[in-house]
Length: 172
Image (cartoon, rainbow, N blue to C red; front, side):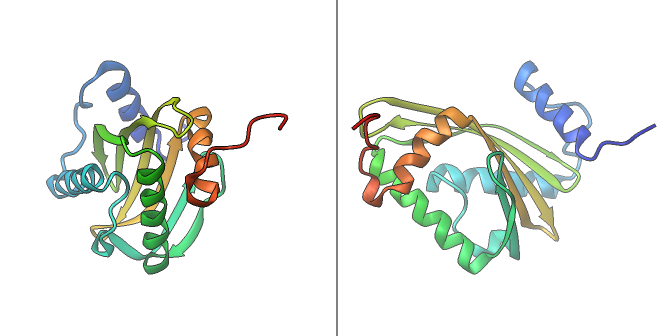
């Protein structure tokens, strides 16, 4: 029988998303559950990933479903993230981050969040994201972010621009 790494956590994520409840038998490790709650609380307050370096290992692997994961020293990576979060708050003053679900199993925490707000061109922004946190010795060692690419790219266009100016119109 062939084994697929991560199959259990993906099954748990599917169960949570489609059936709306925790998967039986998961999250037996109370400390992992507590850490998952701390991450979720920090994200709700900061409207993004925790900025406190004590959450992270010295090196963090970070990637998206639209690019290749890379390793970063936490001391360099976290200010980069919080800088992007500040730009998001500036370009979408009504931004809101809601933690939808959290699943903890083994050495992985899956956090499903929803980011909403109004973009500078007055269009509504609504994106769900699943972040897979790899935990090692009680700290985040890796983050794999899966988002709705169509919505995510809208926001990314604003993040790429200096000061969050509106993206250029097609054909202009």
